[in-house]
Image (tube, rainbow, N blue to C red):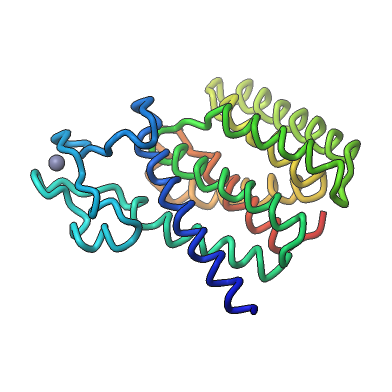
Length: 240
Ligand SMILES: [Zn+2]
């Protein structure tokens, strides 16, 4: 049974991952996700068999068949990491309420990670929907409604403060409004304790990457992507 369940999660995860790649490709163009995917370079529609998750990437050798431009690597990566992360959640939480809530959170996290990394957007539609989901789940889960509300409000306050201080010191916009809503989303979903751990871990990850990378020059750090990684580590290592 264990193997069967993991197999089922893997198949659903690959499908969800594939949907995520469609959303990430189409989002900046404001197109419907079932609108045909086109090459970013020559605008040739990508053939249906090349859009199959994982296999399609190999069949097209990661390139556009007409102009040879490279397809973005997330097309290949997301249908692999989505089922893996969902399986890890299943191993820790089994088919509990937490599993379903965290699965939604992780799927939102994957979308945010790549949208922030590639397009520097953290859509309100995603963060606000997950806040709503967290509030609904709070009536049934171990965190409870008031702790959920406190977690969200408290964490948002702290992050807003950090953003204002950062701005006063550096005179630059370091954290966007999207990042603050993202932290709210995590605060509402994980409660104060795990969100605090997430903020701490994302600052560490951010500082390490900032110290060694090319982001240094532009100062446009995809901080949302670091927050998502830290969120997953917090979920897997801590209790709320
Ligand atoms: Zn092309």
